[in-house]
Image (cartoon, rainbow, N blue to C red; front, side):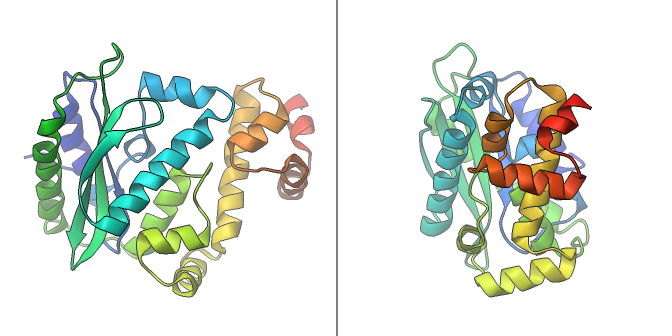
Length: 247
């Protein structure tokens, strides 16, 4: 028996190029189900290359969010090709009639960097992950405020695209006002303030680790207006992005 969901996924992937992840949307969760960010986004050589080109990251996240929206709306598993031509399978995990999580199995295709995995085996693999999640839910107490933690988890994994309150309400099947009040009560920040803070932190990292122009970094972290990005950055850190990089 594996001690956590992360360990199970690593064992299922072992010896393959598959990428298996889970995004939780409901009010469930415990310490055994916590996953690192790479288990909530697509990570593969093909994905990394696609996200590195101008606009690529936003295209990938838009494709992924549309797939999540379909899974939450239809409550049915399905598979298809992503914008980069890779096959991906999504499997909604239902609890009390609502989608509590979406299991995704990707990096499947004919490219040498992807896994030539038979798509007809995806439902069985997703069923194994679902069964383990259900079992782990019974083995440890729920985290405090799992809904707020799942919201933060989703936002952190999707800073570039798809973190508007209206979209979050659709995915998490809660009223917008309720989600906004809950998040503010649990974190001390509105959702938009939290998103901006996390985007600015991501921008700081990129300013330190890359030579990309400021305007490209602003777009990459989710700001469509570089002037607004500069103003927020200086308000948060006391210097402009250019000054921060130079110093």
